[in-house]
Length: 447
Image (cartoon, rainbow, N blue to C red):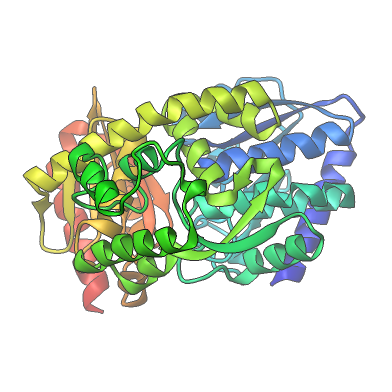
């Protein structure tokens, strides 16, 4: 429970402060919005406590990434939003290690030089109730209560991991309530529309993805004209009646696509704002995802650390990132998806974007009957990202377990959550991989 997180975070803080000031502490985190915010929280907390840091943001922490870190001369390594799935490798390191993770764990008992803070080991569901950033925030608070002002970053990470779907709950809800009570956030109910103009906001809308509208200039121009609006109007210039009309049209378009109710509920909902993250939390998380998965990881971290110029640069790069995703989504709507008995799959152009595209397609294009896998052939490796939904998890789906089991049998790597996971295997084992995953997921869903 929460008490366990507090106690473990205090242990982690004691390990940090056992090192003299100015010690350089190694931080390794994931490269998505949750991982970037988690790293930023730790870096800010370490700096305030008088420590130097060296941070890396990784796509996955498998052999190559961790082997590089292992060769370094580190006294203390903190891994955030990762680590529990790589515990056997990390136990071979000759330094103190702190793991802060919410993904599925391999084992409870770890070597003496390792401390594992994993939500799932504390009675907290890592799929929905805690993220890498919210757990990293707990460690920051254990270092000093002055780090309470980092709560908006933690909750932006929560938003980035889509843990607002079906409502913010569990440990995340505790942090949200505290942040609101302490005045670090404001809230209001609104729809998600971000862009220099209304036209841009609609054109580049990928989550929610409005089929027939997102990425379709003519359709957007027609819609704006039907509302008797100017193409250059800004979203904040809309009056209440104009907002209501637009919101009704957008929601109806999603209903026609038969989006699940819990996804519909995320479109117009209570949203949270902070100057620390330049406005609305989910919008900031989207920007960080564009940096991390668009090949500009350091830019995302610098933005979190408060660099204004980095924020401006991130905004300019975001459109290119979203256009790439839009092109892929429009292609998939036209060409369709491959089908196995228990899942659908498609081939993507970039392993960093495959999971993003798969998540959007799962929520806004396909029905909810099967999970979706993205496959990327990258030289001699096959990179896999998979996405399910809460209803499939409720009836037995465990993508993290499936990815771990099959990848291990094929001498690869895999793991994650029940609802979202990934794997890397040799590319020549692709057909074998697909058949084995099909068998495992079929068995999960039939239990």
